[in-house]
Length: 327
Ligand code: HPA
Ligand code: ZN
Image 1: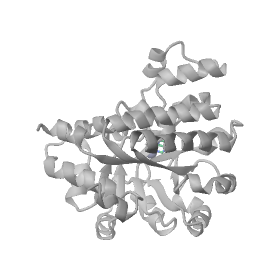
Image 2 (image 1 turned 90 degrees about the vertical axis):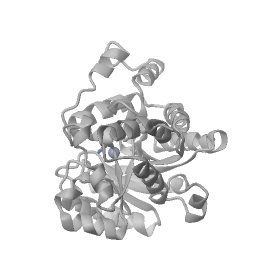
Image 3 (image 1 turned 135 degrees about the vertical axis):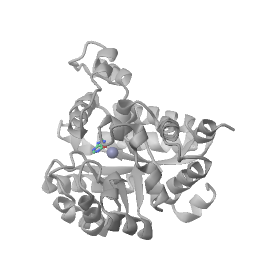
């Protein structure tokens, strides 16, 4: 078997996907039409052409604008269902899906509409696609910790519909310590904890996410290589990084795919995984991330493919008993 075939066919888990980042331009236009929303772009092609980013913030501006068409529970269901169908086609058998409730509640969309629509898709995915999926609620780090705490309160009646919390949006100037209290509260509630760190922010944000937020997994984390002591710690403690190669190039974290550091992360014993982040915006779903990075980096072969698939299951929040049957 050719390596790209192996990569596409192997069962895998996805641990870093923002569901709002799976909203394709076609769906944005369909939802705008049915919700009576006027878009500032004349066509799907014109919208797609605007997806030329210079950094994280330039992406976030257009990503939050795109999410503005999501109004009803049905919209959230449709968005998540279309991701799950696509993921299943790519042999994703488990997915831990981020969602950003504040992006929607700030526009007057009820929290219940967001989570009930997503939850319905997740449950149908388990039943009809055999894809094990769960939700992780992300706090927007450009907003205040008080806003995050209020969002957590809104979420508590739906506690059984999400397995953990994360931290996303603009990293620079919004360090982990800003959210220490809300993460502490989530920890008391028995929620899993993850955080974006070391994407645009410095290596220090990674160690602070571990020490101050007690994050169990780091999203991105690619800037850890700037601190050798941190690399040694991540490897020794088995802290997983959810790396997103196509995202990193689109947002200029690396100038080109062939300059990406995932090969080095693996070589140093870090539990790295491959993920799509925001596939509708970054030019590819999970398999495209796998095939593109393996093509760009000559040091990646069948051994790394197997390692990455295994890492994706081991780094997941699925109980070990269940995981055993998958690896
Ligand atoms: N970083 C921070 N926030 C995000 C991202 C990301 O890569 N994708 C969606 N929200
Ligand atoms: Zn992300």
